[in-house]
Every structure is written in C-alpha cells, then in structure tokens.
Image (cartoon, helix red, strand yellow):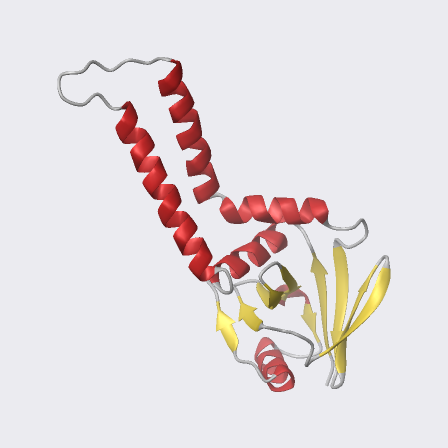
Length: 175
C-alpha cells in the first residue's frame, strides 16, 4: 500500500507544528512558562493600580510596565503563531512544499532541493493528529506535518492504521 501527501508549509502548517510540540513534548515546560507569565502579568497590573488613598498616575514607569505587560500578554496568547513564524523564517528556501510517499519499507519526502528517505523506526517520538494535519514529532524542536486534505492512495482511517503499525506508536489527538 502507498499513501501520498502534498504538504505546503505555510503559516497554518508551521503553527500546527508549534502547537503540537507545545501540547505534547513541551507540555510541562510550557505550563510552567504560562503560569509564570500570567503571574508576572497580574503583578504588573497590580503595581500600576492605585491602592488605598493613592491617586492613579500615568508616568514613565507606568507606561513601561504596561508595555512589558502587553508584550507578555501577546506572547502568551500568540505563542504558537510566533514560534511557527520563526520556524518558517528559518526554513531553507525550497522547503515550503513537500511531497511525501509512504510505502511498506520507508517514507520518502521530496522538495525542490532534494529527496530524503526516512525509515519508520527512525526517532519518531510521537505521532499526533490535529483537525487538518498528521504531525510526526522527532524531538522538542523538530517535527513534520502532513496535510490530511492532500492525502491520496487511501483513506484517513487506512493511513492511521498503516502508520501506527509501521511506527509501533499510537496517534495522539491534539486540539
């Protein structure tokens, strides 16, 4: 059996990769960072509020505190998009489109700059599935995505069964 994916590594794809990494292998570290970020954000707001009989004053320190709090808030809310954007900017030219063929022995990814063959037993830490993509996670900072809408050669259910058998891993669903 042979399955083929045509994947475009656009902002949506790299954001999905970043979110999958954050919600799986980076989960504990991410949770700690978010808790710390929200605590700092609350402290920043509390420091600028007038307590007791003090008057509310907008001065240089207050503005700097608000800017820092806003930066933290943006980072907390848009973390996956920002990480995806950075990853996309770091991609080599010609790697933005990939055709991947999965067969019984291995899977082969072809881009405009080359062809790479991966055996199924090669360092895949986690198989994940989102609404639009299958994600192969290799470590805390490396993953590959496969666009479910561009699958040919079988159904999604057949591919799920095939890839689970070949990698000896269960697929984790990521929202």
